[in-house]
Figure 1 (cartoon, rainbow, N blue to C red):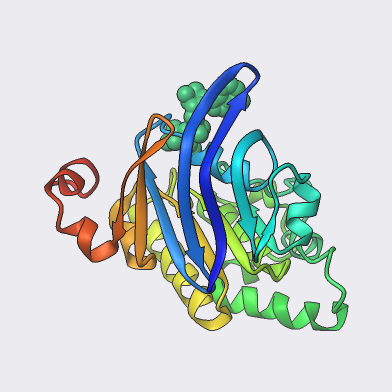
Figure 2 (figure 1 turned 45 degrees about the vertical axis):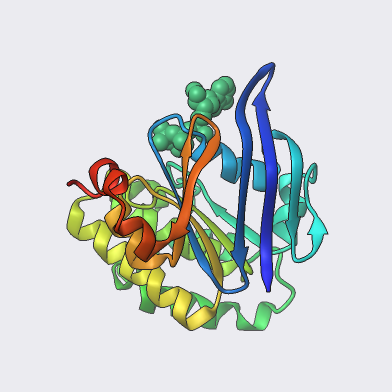
Length: 236
Ligand SMILES: Nc1ncnc2c1ncn2[C@@H]1O[C@H](COP(=O)(O)OP(=O)(O)OP(=O)(O)O)[C@@H](O)[C@H]1O
Ligand SMILES: [Mg+2]
């Protein structure tokens, strides 16, 4: 079953239109990638879903239209957004950030167990549980941002360049944890990534954006076999 569907979505910042018609769908429990060069519209596509930018076209989640809803309403429906640049609350500790992630939940009894799960997923955070988020390394902040999004118990996770600025080994660790989270939780994922090698370890299909449009969509295996994808995104 389809969980998220975008059909011919446009988006503008003020008078400037930057999405010219994006279509994609994410199946229940599936993981879909969005690839594309700088400025192609990847972040804006996630912002359109989250209600952070004015849109046209249709956006449906779980069979209902979410276009035009506020970011708070979209989050309450079960969509968690890990933004570019991570977006943790720097003045709060790791544990406080995780608690804040769960603030919309009604099942407060299972929050401590879920915090434990996050610390098992990202063991590096366990030693830093009382540290301010601002004092964490870039990789640890990325781990915390993902863990905080998980604490909302979403049905869909929007991930924007989780590998950005991380050393290759750290990026790999982060993606392995996301893969484990996906397997164990069944949360669907829409994954923006410039590092296609990493994205392809997680997603089973992807769409390529160029100047606000999809130019190519296919399964991971199909895309890996295409010369233009290999040249542009896979380093040869
Ligand atoms: N707040 C904004 N106001 C005006 N224009 C914006 C704003 N944010 C982005 N844009 C423009 O919208 C277009 C798409 O930007 P977007 O951030 O979605 O690209 P991206 O694919 O995520 O790029 P990157 O890989 O660099 O993160 C770009 O031309 C960008 O300059
Ligand atoms: Mg971006």
